[in-house]
Amino acid sequence: MRLSRATTKREAIVTAIQDYNRRKRMAELVKHAGTCEAMQSAEALQSQRRKG
Image 1: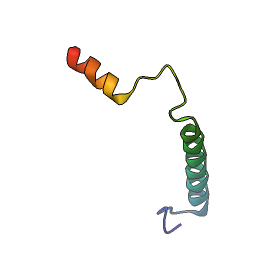
Image 2: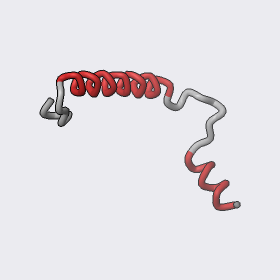
Image 3: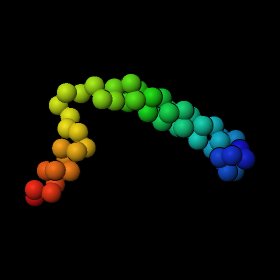
């Protein structure tokens, strides 16, 4: 409760579950990072933005 600054036990548990779910979703996204062939690189996006 101290770390989440929750005022009730319920609020602390809900916050912990939300954080757990967020971390799991992020871990799943990290597994797929850089695997999509259709995605452009950061350099390609910047060059397109400069062209207008």
